[in-house]
Length: 104
Image 1 (tube, rainbow, N blue to C red):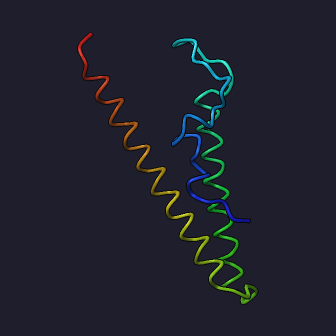
Image 2 (tube, rainbow, N blue to C red):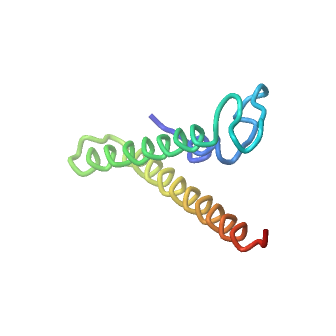
């Protein structure tokens, strides 16, 4: 099972993944998928990537993995997904800090 880093975080990187029927109704909520749901599913996908890489690492160490390239690819995908998640987090924290600095 291989999940690409981009698809793991597609809800964060693309507004089109929310669907055409999603409309924001204001600060109190939205119709369709909420940001929290998209973020949660993205984190779940990231965790799946890491679990897959971990299980392949165990198979590689025990000698049960026939192609070590499979592990290398899975580990790289997981690493890139973590780096992308950290970059998105850093940008979100920076945006929040900037908003808090604004005068009312």
